[in-house]
Image 1 (cartoon, rainbow, N blue to C red):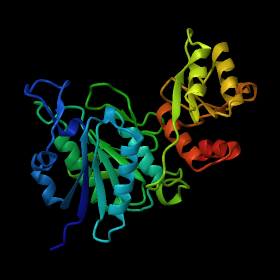
Image 2 (image 1 turned 30 degrees about the vertical axis):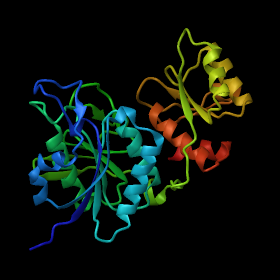
Image 3 (image 1 turned 90 degrees about the vertical axis):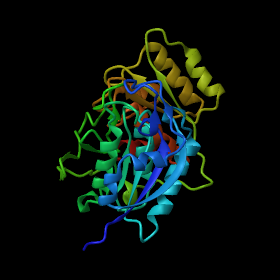
Image 4 (image 1 turned 45 degrees about the vertical axis):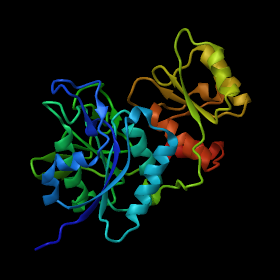
Length: 329
C-alpha cells in the first residue's frame, strides 16, 4: 500500500475557521479560537494525506499586519525544509489572501506544492464552502502536477496562481478569479486538471526573500479621483512612506492634481508606480512617466504592485531595477 504524503496544515484564521450562532448568517461572524475544529469538520482529508497541524494564529485577515505575513513566510519556509514534509496548505482569511499568497510566491524557495485556501462563508453556515475548499486544497497539494507551480490558491473548484489571482466579489463563493489569465486548472469531482503553468519568476527563480530581521518598507496606495488634493501626496511625504502606488483611471491616466502630486513624491525621493483602478489589464508606458517620473505597473494590479514595490525597496533595488522587475515578474 502506498504511504500517504505528509502535509503541513498551517492555520491562520479567517472565515474558513469562523462561526455564527445563526446557520443562515454569512457575515458578522467570529473566528473560532480553536483551529482544531477546522480539521475535525473535514475528516475526509485524512484519506488524502497525513495531516500535521501547525496553528500559527487565529485572526480575521482584514486585521493582518506585515509582521504576521512575514511570520507566515518564515514558518512555511521552515516547514518546507523538512524532508518528511511533502507540501504545505495554509488556511487564510480571504480579505488579504491574495497579498499573502503573492508574498509567499515571490519569497519562498521551494518546488514543493504550497496551497492557500479560504472560505467566503463561515463554517456554521448552511452552505459553508470551507470544508470542500479545504479538501480540494489538500487534494491539490498531494498531486504530482502541483510541483514547480509556485504558490497556488484553491477556491470554488478552481486552481489559481498567486501571481494573478484577485478577490473579485464581496460575498459570492466564486469570489476569486484571475481576470487576466484565467485559472491554472480545475478540480472536477476527484480529478485534477492543470491547463497551463506560470512563466513569470517565482519561488526558486525569484530574486526576493524574507528573513527574520527584515521589515517590509511601507508602501501606501493613493486613488486618483476628481476631488483629490495635494494634501494626500504631502501626507505620504510627512509619513515617510517608502513608496506609493498611484491608482489612476483607464490605462493609469492621472488627473492634473495627481500629476503634480506624483512629481512632488519624486522630488522627495519616493518612487511612484502608476496602476489602474479598472481591475484587469496592463498599464503600459506613457508620456506621463517622463512628465511625472512615475513607473508603469505593466501587468500588476494595485495590491500586487504594493507587495512587489515593498520587496523591491527591501532589496534596495534602484529605479532601473524596479522598472525591469515590474516588466518581467
